[in-house]
Length: 191
Image 1 (cartoon, one colour):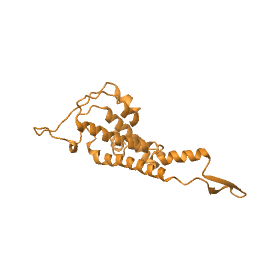
Image 2 (spheres, one colour; image 1 turned 45 degrees about the horizontal axis):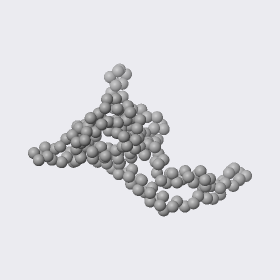
Image 3 (cartoon, helix red, strand yellow; image 1 turned 180 degrees about the vertical axis):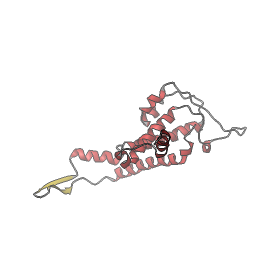
Image 4 (tube, one colour; image 1 turned 135 degrees about the horizontal axis):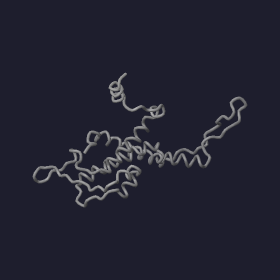
């Protein structure tokens, strides 16, 4: 096999994933996409999706750009969306168009969703409630069994409160909204 054949195979097969990465493809892709969205948010914006365009009096779409501080992309890569949203690593001009602001907010919602998926939904209300119950020692009582060792006897965890279930449903709707926005604006992720 010559070098051209190797290069062709490399290009058409894509990156090699480990068994763990393939088995948990959702988390693997979420980590990669979150990193890419963070870098995309850190760059200078020259436009936004056409569907957000408002027309000036002369019929041309409005467009405004952001001022970017040199070297900020490395700082943004290490940030979560909450940190990014509180203190953006760049200076926004005062006259940013509403479309650019809306586009940045949409990108932020996408980023938040992928960060939650990559983190294994550890900040969901139900996960936090379950962790609290585990700390208290709830869930299972065990009985010694001569043949099998320990056998779970009964579940001692209290039933999940309705408020926690409702908050968890809203949390997952927010995650799904970010994924829906990603699907809707996937072809607009260029500038």
